[in-house]
Length: 119
Image 1 (cartoon, rainbow, N blue to C red):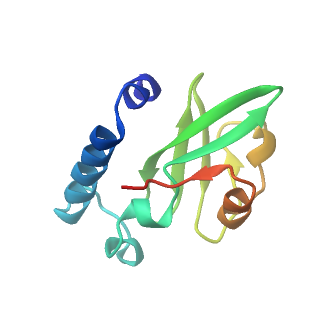
Image 2: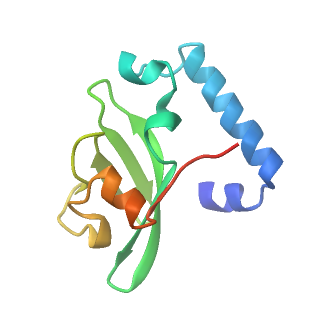
């Protein structure tokens, strides 16, 4: 549903959604570590990470940032993964992580798999 909703929005609408989410963060709706508070969670983590698994391309959307700095990403079919700023991507509930498994955020960005939110 989120994928369809975002794909039906134009650039201006996506920018407004991003600004609302950032405002919520600034107002305390998101409980994020102090290290991320200045730039918000979207400044530290990409909004989407794309991975290939068994010949299928998947888009994992930034869903949650825990107090310990672990970001959770969700895709369709109940697939999820986690990553931290200095850690490696891990699959949740299994070991099938496809082309993202074990990579750092730096490696995901270098390979073009991490997509940041840009106004």
